[in-house]
Length: 386
Ligand SMILES: [Zn+2]
Image (cartoon, rainbow, N blue to C red):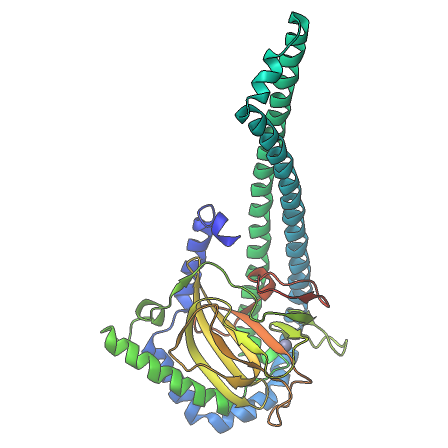
């Protein structure tokens, strides 16, 4: 679906790019951040424990935005439904036209169509038969006009949908800014708390891979990663599993109903046993693998360029990992298998895949995966990847 509006929305994507580029990091910056975090590892772990205070002070602002984010996501879902309903009406109309056309064509090919007119037994019969044929054609023209009108209406609805998604993502960007002000990011709001030790290990491997690419592409280390690293372009993201059941949605929630807002940064997909294959959501490049995180277990990150927009997908609670950092993947690459019951994990209850869509190639901000991948409603099953 994304492909169809790519041209219309090019200007929107371009303005997105400008936002991204402000946040784009160079290899040198990544190295400095890692050195800084590595030196302060013990402090960072202590800070993470103390973060609750920061979250509490951010809560009023976050809470005000939370309901806005949730209601915007609801609007997006409604807009998607409108598009879908009109699409099915267009299909019905198309079928009606095809049926009538095939009737008219078969008739004219066999000359029955003309024969029907010319076999008139009298002049008045000839007029009658001509009128029937003309009416059929007119009726068909009417159908075609109706269909074109619906297609135009659908374009308008799709523009509206895209605007709703942009608006919802702007609120996420606002959330990101508020959190930043308090020294927090979206990981801090998530129940899946970042494992600092495992993350530092993963970042070392990631940077070593970037160093290879920078050398190969002869890039200056001050150059932004997005400008030196190649990631194969892809048209759209698809479901990372062949089947499953939606068990949890993306969104802000207040689990204790006391104004302490939390964020579920992705969707949870259950209904698969441990060991089920997990696929990359689109062509891209594996940039980070976190192993045995206290919370989240094995995590794979894949960078994408979807219709020119830079995104990362994240696959959490994996039982096994089948790729390595730097691997180029397609939507048919098995990146790992479903886990969730591992002994080292402390934030998962039962076999499921947590799937996330992140802004940019290096950020910590999460968008709603439902705005990029077509998933059924909460509680429902799917049995295909599209
Ligand atoms: Zn989850």
